Amino acid sequence: MLVARLWSEPYPALYQPSFAGAAQGGEQVEFTVPRVTMHARGGEDLRLHHMDLMAESRVAEIAVFSTAFPADNLEDALEDSSNAQWLQSRLEELTGESPEAATVEWIRYTAERNASVEYASVEYERVIESAYRVEFDE
Image (cartoon, rainbow, N blue to C red; front, side, top):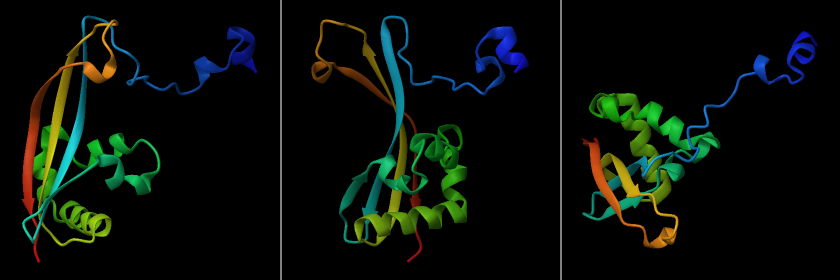
């Protein structure tokens, strides 16, 4: 009640989101996303979306993925046996295939801001910030 009386809204007393997904200012738009490629034992490569991998979390999939497989510590995260076992079983569950290995990449996309260009026709600069391939046991 004191907060409501002093500020007339409860927001100063409550946790506020960071709004990290809000539009950026400036001349460029930049975002970083993970890309996961499963290398099946039969030789086929399958690309999976990180949101499919993290679907069980049901909220903030990219935040959960980036905590489990951070771009700045990707090798250590994938060499951790519990992470590797989870990724292997999740890939098998999603694809029905037996994964031999997986590659996780964090890719930064940058595009020039231009309001007159349709979104589908925007050209992006693509930079792989980090990548690591983990081999799975049979």
